[in-house]
Every structure is written in C-alpha cells, then in structure tokens.
Image (cartoon, rainbow, N blue to C red; front, side, top):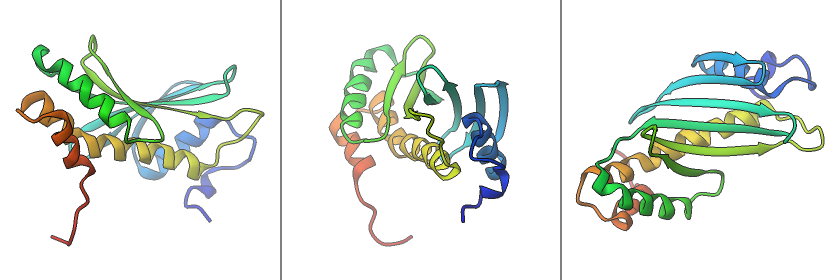
Length: 167
C-alpha cells in the first residue's frame, strides 16, 4: 500500500487534491493558487526548484512545469540550446526548454488523463520525482556549458555517465 493512500479519501478526487496530498506527505512548501493549480518549492542538491501543476479539464491533462533560475551569458545561449536538444534526446518522460525572457530553465511534462481516468497518488509522486531527478541530473551539464568551456556533448557525458563504487 502506498504511503500517500491514507491522504486520499476517494477515487473520484480532483488531480490537484492528489498533488496537494503528495506535497503534504513530503512536507514541501506549497500554495494552492486556484482549484486547478498548485505551486510548490522543493529543495534539491543543486538548486531550489519551483514546480507548478495545473489541471485542464478540457484537455484532460495534468501539466507539470518545474523551473530553476539560469542566466547564462548571451554568447553562450546557442550552446545552451544545443545542450537542450542533446538532453531531450536522452529523456522519455518530459523535456527541457529555456525561457530566455524569464531566464528560467524549464522541465515540462503533461499527464494525459483522458476518458475520465484518475491519477493514482503514486503516479503523481513519480511524475514530480522524475522532474526533480531530471533537473538534478542535467543541471551540472547546463552549468558547464553556460559558464565553462565545456562542449555540449562532453557536458552531457557527465550527466549520463554511470557512477561506480561508493564514496
């Protein structure tokens, strides 16, 4: 049985209610912005991440956006975009983009719940966890490209390299 099951009273519950239960379970700071939207802040190893989840009943999609500040020098943007393309080739469950005007790196994912499907707490928890894992995993690559002399492919090798042994 899932750890979040005792927070969920019914199978007919709003997706944002489930997100709120997951956030409460993890003791993440959150703010219910509207019936269909919640924002939270989660501390990672590299950054604090801002997550927003919004439910669109018309499209039947629970959309997750996870952002972190990134303000690379203008002359490095083409390499950042190249790194984003290489990164997105390596991920299956979402994708990165860079919002230049806001100076934010963004992970986006949409969970389709068509046909009156109901998301399980474990499913939403995994969706959020995958966003955080992706941001943590690829953050060093973006940093190396944005502020170092590292080529996008070499920077991505760091994120994709397997760790061996234990420290």
